[in-house]
Length: 309
Image 1 (cartoon, rainbow, N blue to C red):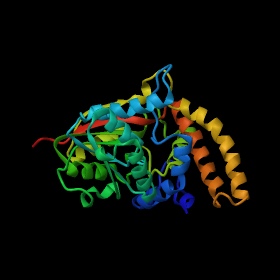
Image 2: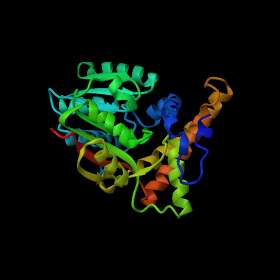
Image 3: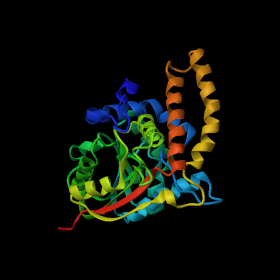
Image 4: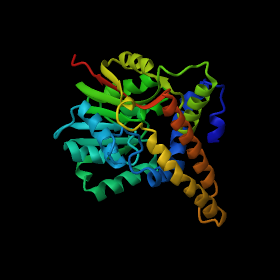
């Protein structure tokens, strides 16, 4: 089961089961995609938010910011690693005029993305493939894309360097790859049980094999052959902390939680619906705590370049 997969020693992630994570990521998104879309929107990520800025505007700004780091513009082709239902790609192609191809492991998300892309009138600037982003070379030709980005998706990779190597292969020489990573910050103390419990809770509630550090991502990028351009924790910006949106959403989520129980009881919703929602509420609590303690960032930016020669 999903829960048994995450039975682990404190601070040890999922241990030797790490290579089985693609199956569990697929299962996870089959369980929660509708909840995410209903409760958060079509873009499954966080954002640094300015005072007076709407949640929706902050989400779009977060997306266009990463597109700017890879220089996406008309005539260029980029790949969205772990695109979900395509909220970011739709906003990015509208803002840049570039073409974006997304990849997701989840079949249901592919169908939703195609439908939403058509409704938004951006089908001509977008494409989507179902597949494991740990196996990009079997989906796309080498040296194919002018740029790549991952928005809070690389955290699901069983091995960061292995993922970066796959992205490296499908990029043209000189192309840029930017990723918002879910990471432990330097405030994390492995000897602090509260810190360990919160980070382990984030991993379990979000189908992560482990929660890494920026130093590990830099080493992975270099090991994959990239030249690291710069890193920056966007969670340190904005007038409102990123987790503030979680607090507001969670209040409404408790009402939804009661409703899911009622709908499941009268057999309108499938058995297990409320259990899934319970898992998401627990994940939200740990994400908030990680942000409040400053030990976790869901938007640590790393920008890397494939050498020209």
